[in-house]
Amino acid sequence: MLTQPYRNHLQSSENLVTTYEATRAGFVALALEKNRRATPYVAEARVLQEAAYQARLPTELLKIEGITSGLLTASGLSDKSLKHLTSQDKTEAINGLIKNYLEPAGNKFVEELVFRFLLTRGDKLGGSMRNVGGVLAQRKLTRTIISTLTIAGINYYWQHSKTRKWVEMTTDDSDIELYLRGISWENLGKNRTLIYNLTVPVVGNNVDMCLFNLSPKELQASKCNLVESYIALGELKGGIDPAGADEHWKTARTALKRIREAFYKVNHLPHIFFIGAAIEKKMAVEIWNQLENNTLTNAANLNEENQVVSISRWLCNL
Image 1 (cartoon, one colour):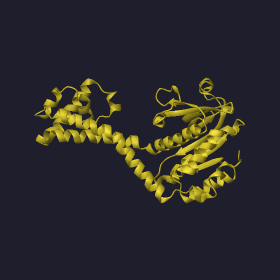
Image 2 (tube, helix red, strand yellow):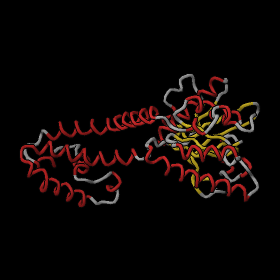
Image 3 (cartoon, rainbow, N blue to C red):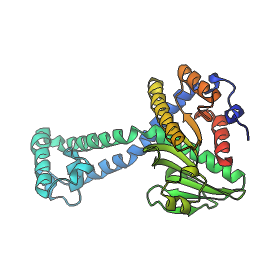
Image 4 (cartoon, helix red, strand yellow):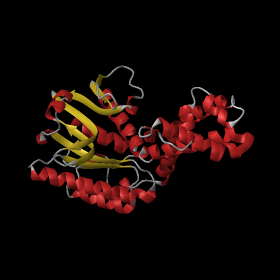
């Protein structure tokens, strides 16, 4: 294996720089994802609207079965806040909505109700969108890793992000990247397990990607405490906005430095890598310099297919 694996897909820092076309495509992808995530909220609003039309007056909304949750949302209460409120608190919130906003709206009170429902849901959507770049980045990289293993004829298991159960690969692997937290495979008698967003004990912080020389069962038994089991650790930054590129790199650079220093203290030197979507010229030069002086083992621009494939093949063959 090359001692400089990045040379398979990079010739200079210029190759790391995100193009205008990639930035534009990234913003479009974010818009499409936002619309996808908004679909359930729009459907909920339509159901609330149709049910609310049964009321002739705002106060009659309280008599309609099955819309209490919608009324609470329209009152400005988030799902999280509801866990801390009593039944009386909830009733007061709905009565406040009716008195202060729906009754003044006159015969347009149903429209006012739906608007306020969507306003609260929109706030929730905005919160979920803050890290959507990272989510999309993880999905893209995961799909490429899965494809790399499939093309190589290597069977794998994947871990569901919610149940934490490990599932054996099937002939239909469509959309599993939406729910995947980890992936494990065996190649040439070597066990490999890749986990996303893991708190690494020796580092004391969350790391975006960790590759181990353990099976899932061995990894669970070790509780991630076996320092020598770490093969590679990396940061994955999926934000596409050029205005935030430098900040993303500063965050990643600090995290990668923390990783190196922590493992150096325990006499273990795993591979360190970085993958980013928004890479400007100045940071590209800095990343390239870290590659050249072996501070980083590998790096790639998430928007360049050949780079994503190359770094995925590198990870799968470590």
